[in-house]
Length: 310
Image (cartoon, rainbow, N blue to C red; front, top):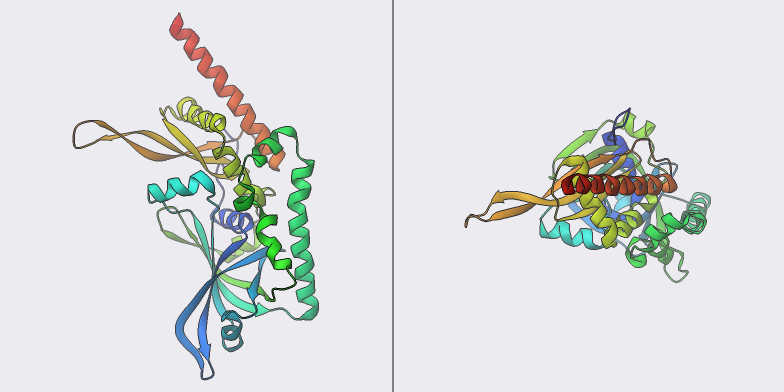
């Protein structure tokens, strides 16, 4: 469980992973009319891909953003860490915010050839998910196939952008500043030099499928509970995968909390961090090390039980 190097990502790496993991965000531009720019902000949900580390955004042809950016290219783009399926319901119930990224910069429309290149990149991004899943091992495909296809598949969620009946304007978002907002709503400014030099994990685009696939499995959630017990000495009654990265993963565990007003023991959701012995370079490595940890915890729990019986 102990890593020789840093066990958590830098803020810049976390931001890169969040943007790489999602495919939709909220675009904000300054409202404009024939007289020019106004103070009000117009917001809508849009879909995007990453190309060479930069967001390329598809805006419906009739959307107000297309008018606003003619007058004023300044804008901001907010992307949330994926929280699919059971995790979404849990976060809502405990009023915990998912981590997210707020980018500011210029929203620049692409013309002809550049727009065509972006469209070709879109097709490649969609095919890459199919390729990875098709070539994955039994263990990996088992985890990914357990996830909700409609809500976690990048391919499924981006395919409407290829519909010839719907027209879009493609924009390149040139980032000038970046903020990381943690689960408590606190904003942390990230150095742009770090953003420019850092890279997202190779399996970040599959984060939503990994998280949901694990959380949809009762057996794997029981394993997360064992992780809390064996590695953090916490007796968890339930557990959910919260986030994944090449260093390890974060878990929300339901553990004993302060007594309630009637004197009975209560429970609270607490975040736990678990690190790999070596960095997971791809989804295969991530799942392999997760399985190794599951097997290790079962052996340790069995040895505890054996000692107790003696």
